[in-house]
Picture: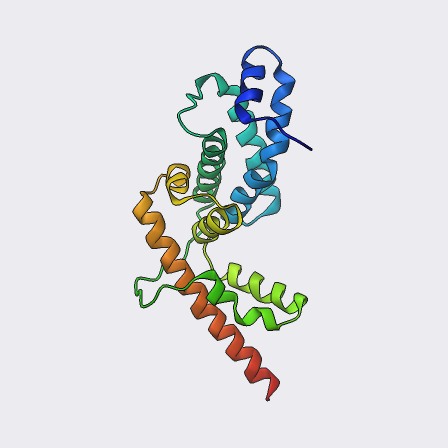
Length: 192
């Protein structure tokens, strides 16, 4: 489906064509759901959060100042709702590692994965994401899979831009270290 700009649909809704909001939902539903899922790690909760985020955005649309992109504003609503849900459930989150030795890129992290079959790659990538806490997997998803810049991620998450960069650096290191462990275990299993 070919979409108009977000501003076009917002203007339509604000001028009384309420069903134009459905286009905004269709355009952003995957990312809103993904942001929520990365944080709460439960499909049903993520669906509920996504639905609530769209309802809140619709009800508050007239207060949207359009100083930032609509997607940033919407993802922030979803992010905050997911964090609130997580706090309510009192889930413990693993702390981010403090020791930073090197900066790894995702290319380096997944370099060895290219030699593996697709199903094995998926298994390992899934294990890597499981090793991350919800905040970490959300940052990785926003930055690498959705290509959102650190400035916009800072706006969505309420972190400073430099904090986003530091956290991304630490997450890459954590993923690299975890990948090395996984690959070492897999090689060890082959020879035992």
